[in-house]
Image (cartoon, rainbow, N blue to C red; front, side, top):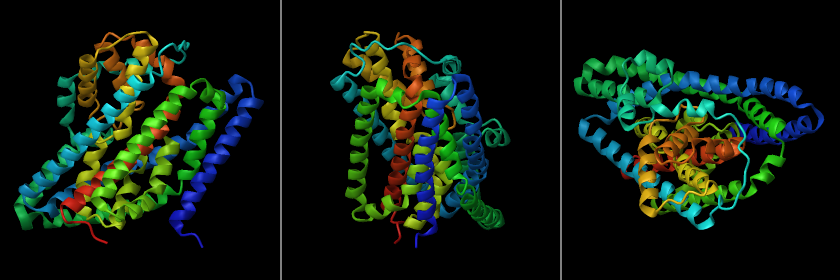
Length: 410
């Protein structure tokens, strides 16, 4: 008999296959206008699932993070755990960015390619103005916790929760009832996660069927080189991440991979790593990571450790430069890489976040922002890979920090 977790994973995989079949049948058998209308209606299934997940992210992050910090105790411990987590995040981000840069320079996927721009870039370009260093730093700090929760600004919720948790830790017994209450809230929310995940197969079916219905499978052959080389990059990145995981976690890495198969599958098919954050939190605790470390490191990871997105940003930026025949010297490419590293933090909740950052960066380096239109048609397929990679990176990061803290049980 399959366990409940394996049953759900099986249903998600079935939903992916059925979604591809239904989408392709619609693409072949319907007029463009009709299938676009049907595809929009199918997207409702995905929207409902993602909304259900988003509704529990803010209370989950707040309650678990405050409880986690309060349990960590003194500020030295909070600083040590946070420092170790950020050390891992920055190292992984740099490796991801450098790998993207290296691959584009070696493989040159954009050289000699004559693609026609297609797709509306206005929704992406309109958002690029906000990505300056000054605005990013100001955006870190919430002017209102209620507003941050209403807009699911994970990074702002993290900042408020850290201050709240440190205050709870410093006043001791007075804060015990508050911490106890938030611990109960966290348990209730985690129970809700189980209910919400039952909608995952419907969300997966809607997402896959809608995109195949509109673009068909032919879009993949048109961009086969670009997609193939990007996924080659992701495969190398996975090898590096898993290698680091095996090095630091040993044979327990196999168990971790077994536990995160379902979150990876959901992130891959819905193109949202955020959608699996509650489920990932639950699985990491079952794996043996202490709740106080998981609830502190994982929300930070969703703001600072998006490995798949990082690699995609250098890959896409330099690909567009190649298509337009713009040559960037090594120093300029490194400057671009560091710019991407800074401007990409805290974008987890922004739709098409990676493209927004890429568009902002193109403008800074004199590359036509309209180049985004070249990769828009297949962004969904690239987003599938980078979302799954983000989940793997954050799962390994949280487990490794738990091990470093001596908080990884069996």
